[in-house]
Length: 186
Image (cartoon, rainbow, N blue to C red):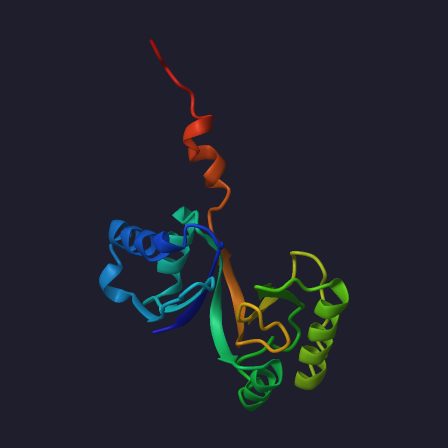
């Protein structure tokens, strides 16, 4: 079964799995989904769905999910991630695809130059010659996520890489906010 990296908002941490399981049960694919890596406090969850349509159904209603990625790999450092991707040519943008890379960090803030440094290291070591696209119209969007331990910002704890599949339904938060609903009273 395909593996996916789910990237959550860092709020309502205790409800992530509850939301995932309830939506999976509501859509009828709870039995065909497994959790491989449960997050403690970080926003990354590694799981399998029997097909990508189940993932898209889930993400269409999930308000805690920021985005979902086809899982490529994760390692303790960016160099290790790139080395693993070098060995497997299927895990990188295909020839003639435009591509872009989104760099995110958990428990650390990156400057624009930090992001550019990581993008250059990623594309140079993988020798990607495809056209780089800076807008949302890229054929392949790669997510690069670094997770740091609290108080230890010099070296990441884990680095995840994957291909973007879909975004969550964070826009529904305002729609279903109890404080903003129309009230018919007395």
